[in-house]
Image (cartoon, rainbow, N blue to C red; front, side, top):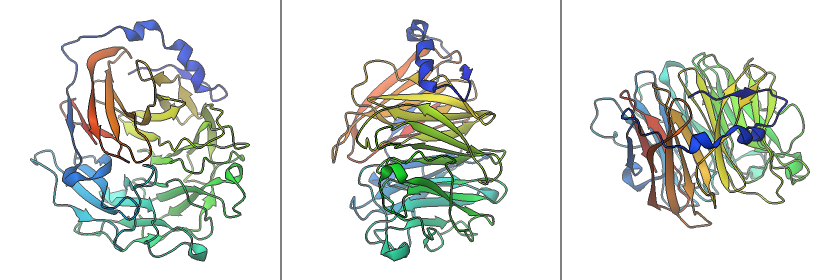
Length: 393
């Protein structure tokens, strides 16, 4: 799908003016992909999915009480009829949290297709963070791929977790655990994004360093997303909190293994509250895709590390009343699946909705909704070798 790129100095939200009425015309091409919908295995919630170079699907999800959840890992090869027997990720029972939908597990694949998982610890989690604070936890799959190594806290001083963290990994052995916090505990506008880096594929981690080059704050109970592409470029998408009211989506990009970062203001939003939002970054072919929420609407765009710059934002079609937790992926034909949740609330489930765009960015007739989204759940997407899409929630 081709999206017009704008300079780093412009707000992506301006691209909405470029989203013409032509995009509202349905394309009923016979080449439109199928979207297969299924529930997370074993009654889990908050699935997170990533595919390796061989097309194997790796998934983590949460199960159990919302304040003391467990994380499980499953995989599915191209010829497998279903997902594998689940392996528990957290070595201490009840170490994860489903509350708020923003604090659950994130997954990444690193060198030698090693699986890496990071999550915000619950009250039952051990080891604890400094001063017995909430830990930022990490575990990786062992050498044999049969179990996860014991969980560990990678936070050395940057406490103040509220919203969730993330993990990214590349093929060069770098693993990044990312979160936002405030060691001085003096408000959202003084929070920063922190990165703990491993140079040995997750065996050991260095002391965390601040990533955002200018003080933007960070929305306390919002999630963030980290991702490393095939070239080793690191991307971090998060919601700022300047002066506690400027809740702008902000993208950080590093081409030197988290030593320095460029920054793009992706979408402005003035709000004197925390929207408890999540966002998404993924790579398909040569494209880096991001998705986020602004007000009651969700959007996606493509990213270039040069600049860095972000394309014009594309909104989900139709009336937006309470859309959240967007994800986006692209198949080999350049068709895009955009999915999100709707009508959710505190301890309340809602709907999943999706829309496929063709190679020229036009809406197709491939779209739908499912009304059985559980409380605290969200949606994940991936594509198969035939160009079709899978949607799991």
